[in-house]
Image (tube, rainbow, N blue to C red; front, side, top):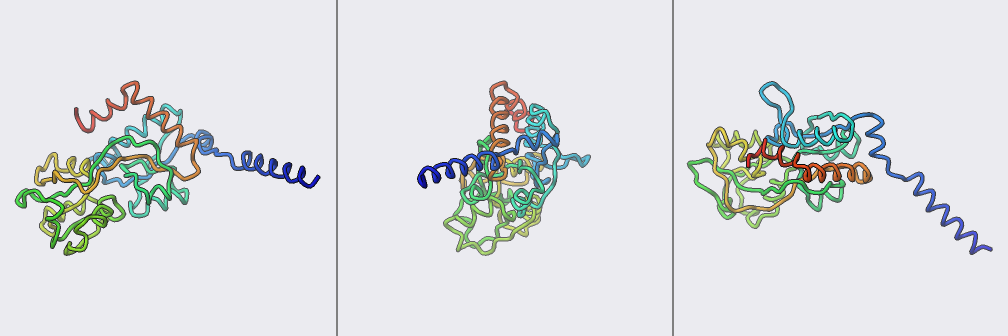
Length: 254
């Protein structure tokens, strides 16, 4: 009798977990009619403010299209990149969709969507300096964004103990401006964003050698499985019907 009672209690416990622990993240988004995307609004071309102060970018267009297909709206909330995962986990935003690199340390804190874009961490220098390799960072002053994949790449590089100083900035743009002004010898950051910044100015070189090869994905809260599944589904559909490629060409060309 005791054995039967134990089995019954175990089954009831499992059913209770299924019923009360059910993931309703997608349902919540559909009920309120929108989801909030956290982003660094200086990270062109992924998400940034244009000359009219509007938030635009590759990730912005992807998020808008996914929201439209889900039948909801999307709101964009600028955040400090170094604290953006805290904003996500505390409920201030529903996801981070802003060229976030998938890393093992981040994967312990967030649930990532399927990767949607490849990226490299490279070294940017001024034209008059030539092109740097990783070894050339020895004895140099290097700029990175706080909490960024560039900062992680420098920390994990073979020359980390030989770098003269690593200066950390709130945004990559601030670091690049200091590089152009001669206050830095190099900036380590995303190739996608750095090249976009340099398109009009052409004042910088980017290294052929990568500090790391990476992939971008959308970051959500650990338990938001149904919302993550929906985003994966919509992105997959957009790739099949060609919408993803159209948005990619708009921002990066062919």
